Image (cartoon, rainbow, N blue to C red; front, side):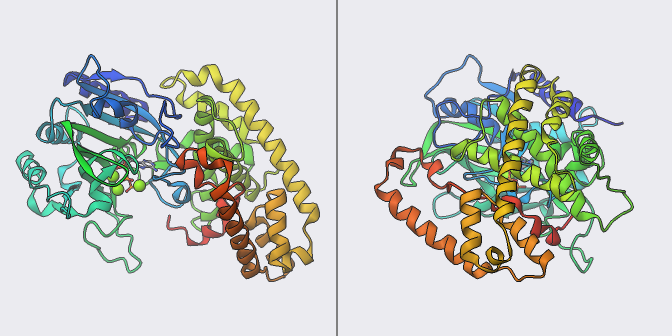
Amino acid sequence: EYRSGSQIREDFLRFFETKGHRRVHSSSLVPANDPTLLFTNAGMNQFKDVFLGAEKREYSRAASSQKCVRAGGKHNDLENVGFTRRHHTFFEMLGNFSFGDYFKKDAIAYAWELLTSPQWFGIDKAKLYVTIFEGDAAVPRDTEAYQFWLDVGVPAERIFALGAADNFWAMGDTGPCGPCSEIYYDLGIAASETGEDVPFPKDEQRYVEIWNLVFMQFDRSSDGVLTPLPKPSIDTGMGLERVSAVLQGVLSNFETDLFTPLIMRAEQLTGHKVEPEHEVDDRSRASLRIIADHARAATFLISDGVHPQNEGRGYVLRKILRRGIRHGRLLGQEKPFMHEMVFAVRDEMGAAYPELKESADRVAKVVLAEEQQFARTLELGLRQMNEETLRSGALAFRLYETFGMPLDFMVDAARDAGIEFDMTGFDAAKEEEQQRARASWKGGSQKSAAPVYRELPKTEFEGYLALRVDGARI
Ligand code: ATP
Ligand code: MG
Ligand code: MG
Ligand code: MG
């Protein structure tokens, strides 16, 4: 039977309510009192101090559907979006949490019940794989989790031990962390170029990670030392878009009902329709997905108080917005259209996130202003752009720096004009500028900025990635 994304979100929360969890509303995308974190990137963020024992709540079990953005900082999926089936900049993370209450055994049993019980999600057990942490110098192999997976009935040959990159979770460079177990779903398609089966976990197209169970045991300090937490806890995260794709029987998050209305709206607004039978139209399809994704991210970020700017959080928002606009242009839409996407996002998600109903008009105004400003930027830049600037990387870099002229605009224009763009000269000029910026940084006043902002260059417009569409693996 068909379940909408909204029903799946609700079923998840209800399941954990029946297991004694308190339903907690998503926190803002702008982390409260945490300058080390660019954006909220996981359900556990709002409970960080509870895990550390520094804050008490009246409940020891919670469940939430958390707004997350992974477009900068430690977890950055910006460049994946549109090119994988499963990554977004903005997504909803479903999570259940235990604050020193239950631990591994129950967390594993709950997850397995929700996913496989016919009364709940009813996923075919033969399609599921799990992983455990293989251990390293600091933390031993997770033989406990291995045993608990066997206990719920997962066959040994479907349990794989992986290293820290996949199976040790940390919110950031410091803070709560621990070994984890990830649950994967077998989409059943061999995506290797030869069409051969590639065994789990190597084939990333075929096996999609849906849920991560983190066994929160340590607090990592800035010098890397792991201190055991007062009480071991549980933090889990399951992408709503991914589990919806599984339950709706589609291969891509972008084919779920969470995205199809937004993609249709993007088609209307850009006047570009991709016919399903046009397999070769991958470039356009990626652009529509990027517009849908970035519209969600921008809408929620602005709604939560972020404003387009040239640094910090606002800079990432600006990059997301301009990237969306750029993809509209690739589809032939040169007029402002992203602000209209805001209302489509509100219509789809306002029931689950009522704050959108309040903020949509304001958000759309901010987006429109950014669209207008970017159009002026492009116009100025385009006027300066000529054969000479395209032939000289140093001059092209000036345009890029001074007018925010996107690199791929210039590369495209050069290609159209049959000129070879001077990428070597461009890179050299950029490197030189970065050296200068680094040198001035050391003694500069920006020293007091939060660490995460320091990585962000002031003007960096190459997130456009149009050129990468050729490498799309969709
Ligand atoms: P992946 O390896 O696929 O990038 P991850 O291991 O980085 O995922 P976690 O940090 O474990 O992801 O987050 C918990 C869950 O959130 C994942 O299992 C996945 O379902 C979902 N998720 C993570 N990143 C994204 C994203 N960019 N877009 C959509 N869902 C995501
Ligand atoms: Mg990831
Ligand atoms: Mg992973
Ligand atoms: Mg994971």
